[in-house]
Amino acid sequence: MSNKKQSDKQKKSAINVNILVKATILVVFTLVLLISVYVINKDRPRFTSSETSGVEYEKAVVLEVLEDNSAVDETTENVLRGSRELSVKILTGRYKGNIETVTNYFSALYNVNVKEGDTLCLRIDTLEDKTYNCSVYNYNRVPLIVMLILIFFAVLAIIGGFQGIKAFAGLVYTVLCIFGIILPLVLKGVPAIPLTCGIIFITSTLCFYLIGGISKKTVSAALGCFMGVLFAAALAYVAAAAGGISIFQTDEAEALLLLKSTTPVKLRGLFISGILIGSMGAVMDIAMSIASALDEVHRLNPDRNMKQLFSSGINIGRDAMGTMANTLILAYVGSSLNMCLLIYSYGIGLRQLLCTDFVAIEVIKAIAGSIGIIFCVPLVSLISAALYSKKR
Image (tube, rainbow, N blue to C red):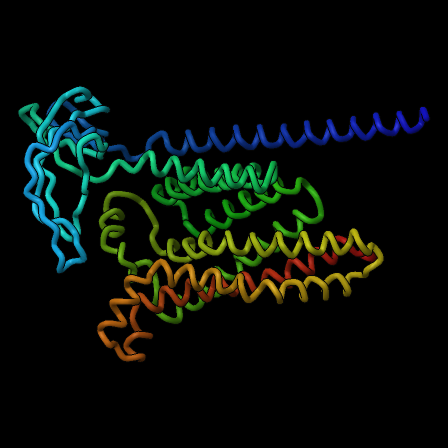
């Protein structure tokens, strides 16, 4: 009986030590990340305003509709045309509390339909004579965005439990790394591809660590994910070079060239970096699925050798490969559905269609990401089989 109590104490002690180690690692990583983000973004570009200049976007509430000259246009699917005179009260910023009259214009492309009591985003232009003009910029979408994030977190926490909360934390880390590290460093002239590869390796490793700690499962998933993403990037690089595709063929090329005239940003690696980031999520998904499945197979039958485990991983991966490969392709098609509709309506021939920059870019993105998913299956299977088998 005493031996059992001693064994239980040892197990509890080991669990406590494990929790302490995990918490320490997470705290250290969080501090390093936050300090890095702060240091890197200290000199980030900022829109400045003064008493005689500046453009600000502030929250305002509609007090009253003073005059309504709008009408429904049935020829453009019932969108509003015309204008409304609004009395609004500014709720934030240096002009907080001021009541202004603004004209809200309606068109097919610009249609912010707000009524009394609604909040909106107000653009305020300060002039040299210390006066300012107000105009309706857009809906106040901050509450909507916050609510969607909270719903996403709640669903993850309720259905996924503590694992779901850790997955959300991993997502926060990834978003912070992309917007707080990759973007400012690229703007400062750091090459995009090696920087993105390093961040992907760090963030994917942390996400897997949050989900499963340090184990054979997470090690194989992290290594397989990183190598799969690299395969996707390599294929995209070769295809882009062969097809003459670069960042200069994208819609943002002109604005980026203007940006380059004032900053040391290097544009050529952005196209491949975008593919790396875009394929990361799907590759992480299938990497963890294969690693978890092989971990369970090994637990149920520890005597399986490396060849048998590898074969099991391939068989499991084949079932998931088709749907996961569709994930990226359908995601890219969905994001460009409006453009696809326009292309279809123009009756463009197949040869012309396949030779356009837009189609080539989307095909390279979708195929390269899907290839990364496909390569991830044998890579994770091989690494897991090597780690779990008795004969290394």
